[in-house]
Image (tube, rainbow, N blue to C red; front, side):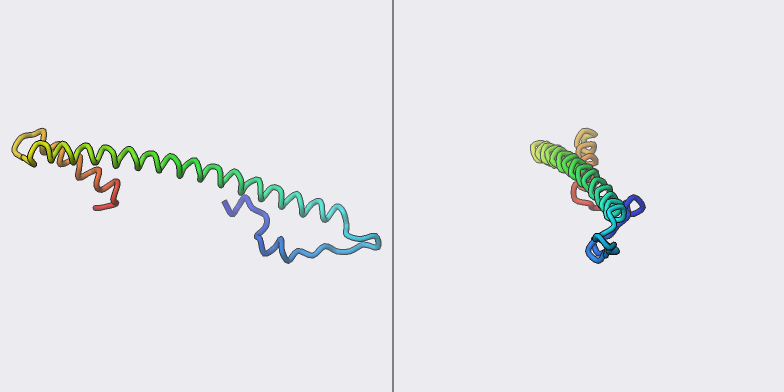
Length: 105
């Protein structure tokens, strides 16, 4: 993102325009403000994308937690019996979901 931005907040704050006999040079002010506008437009695009990504991750996390609870309930309902293939598959899936949801290795 830094390669798309022209200015830092500090540069905006400290920028000084040269004064002509009639005031600031309009072309210089316009050029500077164009850069500010481009930066803020880029910030808004970035913020919107990050908000969308965040909402998608929240929804994915909600789904994974729901599946985790269902698998855990399934294990508890079967009495935790690991002897058959179905239970071991459920345990394996549960372990994988724990890794994803809680970041466990």
